[in-house]
Image 1 (tube, rainbow over the protein chains, first blue to last red):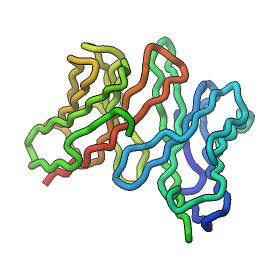
Image 2: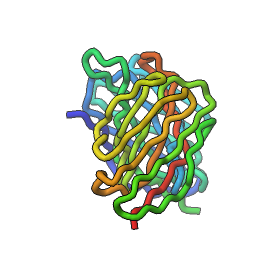
Image 3: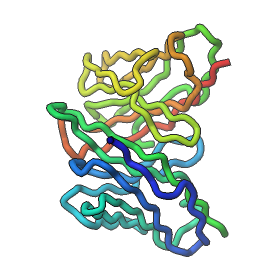
Image 4: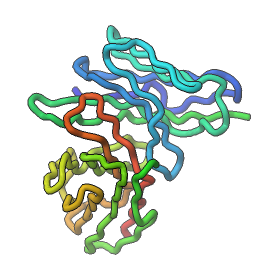
Length: 116
Length: 115
């Protein structure tokens, strides 16, 4: 089916530690994946993206890894800070047949809690 | 939130009333989208528009209506036919034009509560 899910609903880490948030997707035909961060009461904020022809992409303090063999996506946050506390969603873009519009499919989200 | 604005931030409605949520973008994006988010859940697509004067139903369009008369604006009307309208509504936009790596950027959201 079409679904993008996350392994853990909640992840608690100590400030300064590295965080790893995982996501499993089901559609091997997806071309593009995005990680979003959503703080309470706000809209999702784009963090980083990766195309299906890549295995790894780095941003500022964040790295996304894509393993197409097992259809797994992860977001690594280095030196996690209290401001990183939020819900993190992975999403994939799926094109249906002849449709020219990519449908963004979101997972349920992982809540990251950073302990001071 | 970039150049996407939504208003109002909080909206209260009595049962049986229609309400319209505003979404405006100044990013010169062709495509715009409406999502609904329920507590602890991911986002579900209501309607989307790839170009002015055209829009398509998403996964949960029943009880909602939209219009796209201007490139910058994509208002969503929640009608009385929507059985459970209390939710957080998010508007998004993207460059569109059939790009396979088309990133969607979101507005701040409108929280609708039906009394």
